[in-house]
Amino acid sequence: MAKETKEKEPKQPMPPIGAWGPAVALGWLIPGAGHLLLKKTGRGVLLLLAVTGMFLCGLMMRGAMFHPQSGDLLTTLINTGGFVGDICSGLLYLLSVWLGYNQPDMAGAVHDYGTKFLVTAGLLNLLALVDVFEIAAGRKD
Amino acid sequence: MPKMNLSHFEAAVLFSLFTSVVLGVVTKQNDRDRLHYGIYVFICFVVALFGLGWLMYLGHG
Picture 1 (cartoon, each protein chain N blue to C red):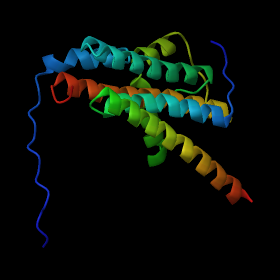
Picture 2: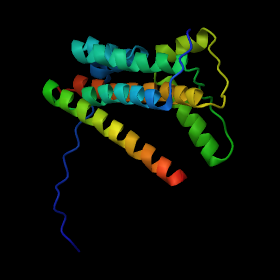
Picture 3: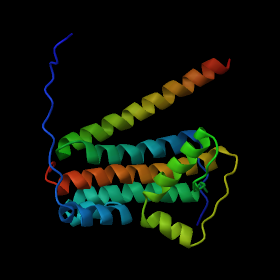
């Protein structure tokens, strides 16, 4: 049996929720705001512009929002995953739903791109949230 | 809300641009590396876009 050449990194302790909770919650609600709260202004503004820009482009392309659906595995995976992606946009998603945005899923390349833009905006915000967590926990500058 | 009508290419480039910005911002440790990585990812997206475009064109016959 080959020897394990790579040493395992020691597991870092979980920081207290008070250190990262508010920044992560704010970052979820308003993309980039978590970075702004942690005084990372340049990065926060870039994230705000990129995620919000992507979400607005998705709306202007009349993309559809996902709703959780059960059925076969693929349907469940796509719709639930898409719904989680949409929700990760935070206030952008909540506002658009509250203001009555309800675009049905239609055939067409532009609509399809719009749907992907909406989901990806949320997933990019999720990446930003991980970054906020690492900064707030002191694991990253 | 105005309606946006983009071609495949325009939509894909816009997608690449937004995604590259975020990946650049969250991935690296300093601003110089972030800028370089963002540009690198954007170029990779565009190269893949043209590569896949040609592949589909040639594969379609």
